[in-house]
Length: 63
Image (cartoon, rainbow, N blue to C red; front, side, top):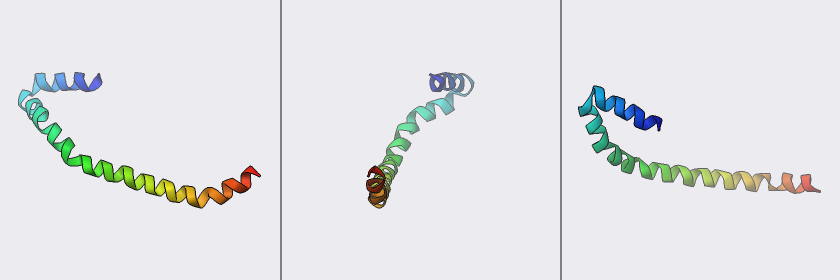
């Protein structure tokens, strides 16, 4: 909701910039999407490595 309010204020004060934002935001989002996917994959890999290293400690703690 706050983003919509900020966009309306931007559209009121500087409509060419708001129009450019409407056009270029989806393009920029599509360009950055692969980097987000790589980030999710790297985070998952690090979580897997951490779980493997912490497995013996968790097993001993449960005894």
